Image 1 (cartoon, rainbow, N blue to C red):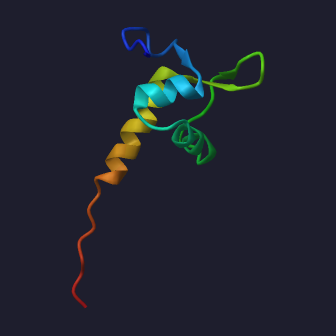
Image 2 (image 1 turned 90 degrees about the vertical axis):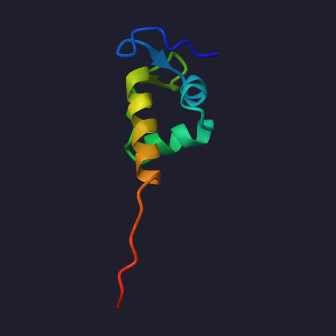
Length: 76
């Protein structure tokens, strides 16, 4: 379980930890990075990306807000 009682600006998460914290699949986290919505803060010694906790939370919030958009139908 990911501990959210930490300094979110300094804490770095792996893809799996970020996914667990955001309650999404790891592929969603990878898609955020691919689409430019989430930037890796650094890489671990194996070259895997590590993300700032605050950036993951912001990406998750933005995704949820985009999902809530409603589009009105315009009469022709």
